[in-house]
Image (cartoon, rainbow, N blue to C red; front, top):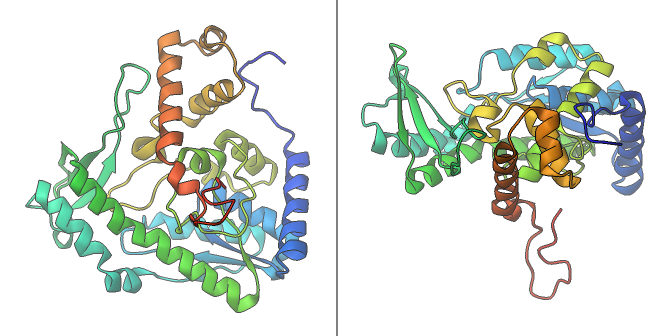
Amino acid sequence: MAFNKHSLQIDPAAECERIVRFLQQTVRQRLHRYGGVVGISGGVDSSVVLALCVRAFGVDKVAAIMMPEKDSDPETEHFSRLAAEHCGVEPILEDITPVLEGFGCYPRRDEAIRRLFPEYDAALGYKAKISLPQNLLEQDTLNVFSLTIITPDGRELSRRLPLREYFQIVAASNFKQRTRMAMLYYHAELRNYAVIGTANKNEHDQGFFVKWGDGGVDVKPIAHLYKTQVYQLAEYLDVPQEIRRRPPTTDTYSAPSTQQEFFFRLPFETMDLLWYAQEHGVPISEVAAVMGLTEAQVQRAYEDFSRKQRTTEYLRMQPLGLDDEHSGEIF
């Protein structure tokens, strides 16, 4: 079929049934586990995965874990409870703030922030986030992050983020995802359940996850689906509209930050079609005509996709061993 704006349309009923069968066969027959544990964030991905797990294992064999910390958006718990209520699951609340304080997550991060903004003080109400340039289609740019702080009186101040500070902020922030992974495995082992991942294709293949953090799971039931296809499943599964309308966020930094702002640099509707076209070898001229873009804009998007996949390959690699023939295999 010729490439068009509906190329990513799927049969959501058939796809849900396919995923449910996969979950049942994988978790029960291959992993020999009784059910599934899902970390819920109130986003569309975890809401869809939770609903699929309930279909696969039954409501009494699914544990939904909420894991906020002091930087989390207060709305996260509301949306998480909404997703759980929709599925008939009683969520379990685990506040991971004390664990993160034990690791020194917050002072390690703030130390790096203060090297750029000495006045930054989270205790006084300052907030912070990191982001990438948003004009991906308009000019050639590198994936160079900026650090933005929001002062207590609402002013935004931004500076280009040097590599040293970027590494430290990310390393400290990744304690959050890795703590959540450990908590999920506690609840999984307590019940002899499997940990069910919530990453979609965009996150998995472009590297928007933390190795041995949110990437540390037993099963990845939606990692083959573009984000826009996950929304199709959400509509079919009747995920509450409040959740479907909510912009996808990182919920990692104290200042609000969308996934587009932090990493992807394009709206999902645009990115998914461009990425699909690249993966399927659609001529750039045809893609540009269908999407109302110039060929140069399409090429910029392609280069960004390829760069992200190449530079994050390490995240998808299995541990390396000297004599293991599968050493370094991509998963």
